[in-house]
Length: 179
Image (cartoon, rainbow, N blue to C red):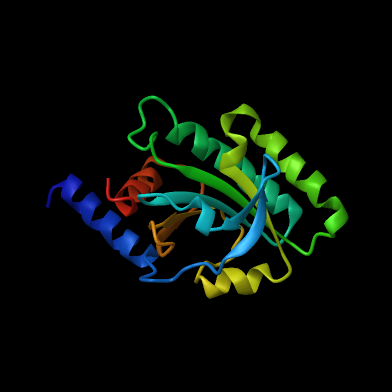
């Protein structure tokens, strides 16, 4: 079997493992980096699939590490040579248990880290009291790895990819998007 065919079969198999057949996130309120309220995932859905770079973490340090990896993903996916540069990518951090009086400062700090590589309407924060349950209901494990979730136009999870950027993961993302 040719190497390219074997790679395609492996990618399809891995994509099938990441496919969640109808799973979805429950709707929750959040705030975008530009301080506008939004409903996740409803307000992010478009005519076609969208990608959500979802920072799910049980610690601040790990959340910051994931954010750094997502910045790398963003830069590489939006590069001129990338076949995925026209795909909508939203960056959403999920923070559990933050007191209401520090939420604006947290959101502002996260937005500042993205700087000018991300429009303020393309990123946001969800402050939840039970993020583990919320993620588990959508069949997304919280395991310390950055998670790219592909959502259909109706909000169903088409699949997800975990880990730092690599050409293989970018190809998996392309396959999940049907490109």
